[in-house]
Length: 472
Image 1 (cartoon, rainbow, N blue to C red):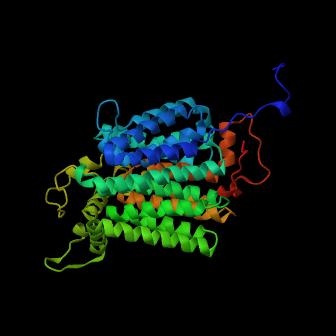
Image 2 (cartoon, rainbow, N blue to C red; image 1 turned 45 degrees about the vertical axis):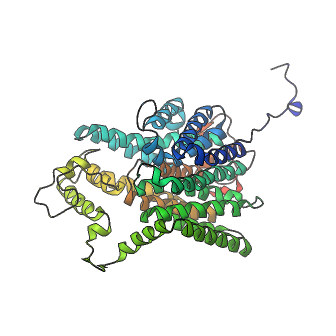
Image 3 (cartoon, one colour; image 1 turned 30 degrees about the vertical axis):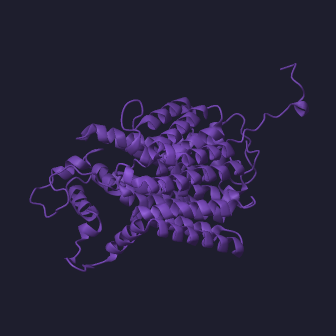
């Protein structure tokens, strides 16, 4: 523009502090929950998340915050609010598909190993819909997985301002910590939710805090703040009684403690976690006893009154599902078709020596088992390659933060898929975020090929703690 002032005289656009504003909104919403109820507060948070995700096409930082909020509340939202009418289970998936259509050139230019393996895996699931006995369930699985590419778009567009990542951890950490408190205070007045599904709510918040933690190293009281939020969410995971989720949460918190700078900060963090645990134990004594009972039951061979626990009892039927699923796989080494596990389980021989759900349609309750049965050898190989790809790329990093985070990501995905299928948005948010961390320059170049200036240092040496305020 000939009439525009010289570059030295141009006024930079005013920066909007979406992080503090969102943190304030989340805090006020959950503060109102004792009056309006947990479900009403959850509905307000969900509407805010959807609005932020849509407006985020104009304001990338707000968009990533909205996506993070929706991924975190995914499990309780599907049970309590996305049950019918305008808001459905796949509302977020549909929007992410639309975003993917808008950014097709970016998706075509993706060359990182994680995206390529996932694309092949999705293609395999689509091909095996041809032989699926349950087309609806198969399409649902594909929608849940392919949405990862939409999440990746939001991550790449948001840039790498370390303050943005810090506030992302604060916002979502508050969402899980305060939301978990309100849930347990009002749990007796709410419809029952499966504890494994519920636990993905605080776990999702904890995983986002895990991502944000390295970026808080240079901020005053940044890491202690995030550590307190992580400890609070770990307490809610423990009280849920979900054993697999608790294992992932403990590993993340141990990694956070190891990554803290200074003995004083570690001492404060551990003291805060202990105080939170004691307070929760005092207020939710029955839930604590139940959670401890479920943990002890998993490793206990004898019951005081009724003899031995069966393996199926100690694993809530998961062992029977695994045994039966293995036999189905041996009969169909290339799979029964995407979405076909419930039908295959129902059609097992009625004289089969398994008790759990015999002759009924049952979900696999495990991404690994589901893939093995439905997609056979090709599917399980691709899924295993995708999960391990983060650790494999992490081994090439010289930055210890990236190395630890990549291994935690692979470990979390591997453990989580033992107890859940593909519907959890928090897991795919984790995968998309780690993909961005490991390949940030390459992904930014794919998103903005005309105005991206390559950095002098190798792409894979970037550290989350070194994200600058003026990234291209």
